[in-house]
Amino acid sequence: MRKFLVVLDDSRECLNAMRFAALRAAHTGAGVTILSVIPPEEFQHWIGVADIMRAEARERIEAHFEVFAKWMRDRHGIQPELEIREGEPVAEILDVIRTTPEIGVLVLGAGTDKAGPGPLVTQLSRNSGNLPIPITIVPGEMSKERLEAIT
Image (tube, rainbow, N blue to C red; front, side, top):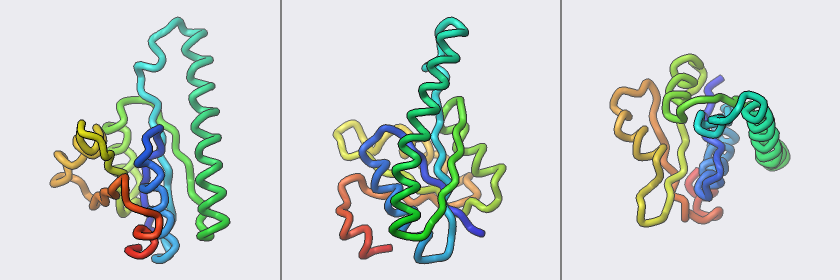
């Protein structure tokens, strides 16, 4: 089964990327894999403190995932999968794409502030010519109604 890969992070635009992935998956009979990456700089402490912080980060990610998963199940009949990785976000995204042949599309949300669309969109679009799958970039300010209309 083809799957949409969407990144779960703390950005506002993540919500529209989740919506888009769920709607497209529901309309095309695909699945959704939600990836969350814990950056290494969060654990530059003593080992005991780092372990506690790692566990807390995983709990926070799993709680956010459950909110999205419930919405996807209840509204769209989609049972998303969660993958949590530790490392540099772009490298981990690329590794998931390369090692999971079912992933057919990467869905990212674009930020709307003056700094640009966000680091993931910027870095991954630079490498998009070498990716084995297409990237869909969802505007962060796109309304829920517009997303539903285009998916």
